[in-house]
Image 1 (cartoon, rainbow, N blue to C red):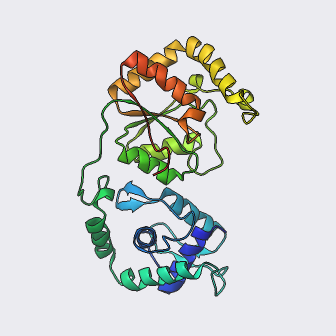
Image 2: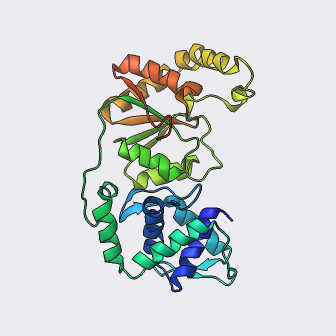
Image 3: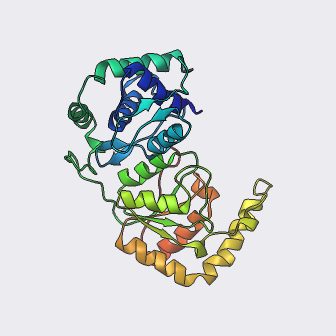
Length: 289
């Protein structure tokens, strides 16, 4: 079991009552943002959604905990601990202390009071809210944006796009599969739709997996990109024109896996798109903030 999943169980133990998923989400957000431990290593990231700060990964992992009988809940019903949870949930003492602090301070607030506190203190997470918006959703000036998701959770990555004012994700992986939750094509498309980010997959501008082998050997990556420039970027003019059309109409980002754009074919593609569109290039999120 992941550490962050243990945190959810500890929240339930500390509360000693059924807890709504809204409460678990907001408590986790406050743990991350207001307490010294920040929830511990690799804790949940959050983005602006229908009721303020939200984590797709938290909800997905809560379903996993239910499948393992660590928790139980029905649709629109509170979460309760399952019989599979032992009396003690192992985690660092600092995190356990901070969980107790969150539950003591916020556990007696009603749902609306909890939302009011979070909204008043974190207005940047309200621009997608169905309740009230305390700030406007950012909208970027037109550029050729690129971003890589390596080392990020899907919530962190999508929040980067939202806060950067991106309205369209152009997936330039040839085979958009990923073991990390959220980055498989179908899932990424679905999550983008929930955030009003259009998703387009452009496989013709990716690189075949058999060409991306043994890239750690000296000069291999440079040879790969020279081949990409000499073949794909010469032969896929129609696909490149489609990208040019996208970036000239909507703030759009070219997305692949590598965090460092210099290690990814998207930087070469971006240069060609920039030349054809007359727009500048901007690489988002590297190094990580």
